[in-house]
Image (cartoon, rainbow, N blue to C red):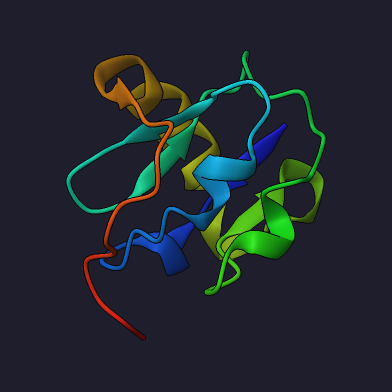
Length: 91
C-alpha cells in the first residue's frame, strides 16, 4: 500500500491523481490521501509527486508512520479526486 505523507500537507499537488488507474486518491482541505484498500501498488503516482510525498508503507520514514492510519481514516471521510487542480502552494 502507498501512503501520502507530510510533504503533501499545505501544498496538495494533484499530478499523482491524473496517473492513478484506480481512482484511489481523496482530497482533504490541506492534503491528499490514498485509500488503502483501493490502491493497487502500481507506483504510477510516486514519480509524479513534485514534493516526494508518496511512499510505499514499507519505505515510509519512521517519523511519518502515523500517516498510514491518517490516510485510511481520511480517505473514508473525503471525496475522491480524479482531475488535476491548482496546488495550494508552489514550493
